[in-house]
Image 1 (cartoon, rainbow, N blue to C red):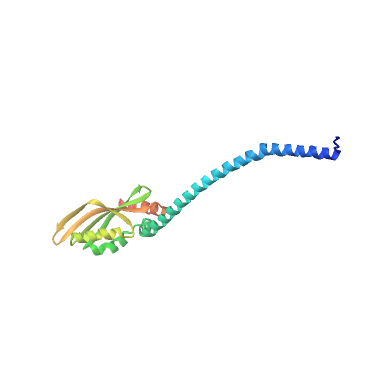
Image 2: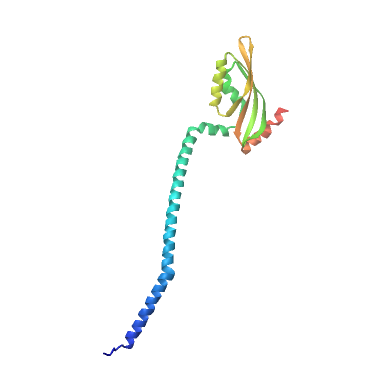
Length: 188
């Protein structure tokens, strides 16, 4: 039995073997390592996406809470931006006192990024209840004010004389520091 192989068959067989070897080498050298790297990258991407989703949920919850707090405390936030006006303060709170006088308004500097003013106050009240009503009104006023203790009460006939100091807090902005500089010469 004689095998008759033509040149074309040998040529096709050699090209087929060469292509088979090329495909095997290419598969083991390039495709399999890249496929393994792809699977590892895909697993890593899923982990990162899960973590990103967790942080996005946290951000959304925090943003929602921030919006809720901002809307609930809008009055307080705007109060920090208000510049203290002693005349307006006296007009707003005069109804709680028989007489109310603010004196020696001075800027005492910065405290935790807020400009702080100290205001000495003397007043006459008819009853301690009106003073407590005043304190409630200060909490709802246009400024952030802290009433400092001790509060001095002295009986004067039918009325009670009171004197106390208040600290007024404002945001540390150029307009406030400008006013702070303006109030310092008045205290001399």
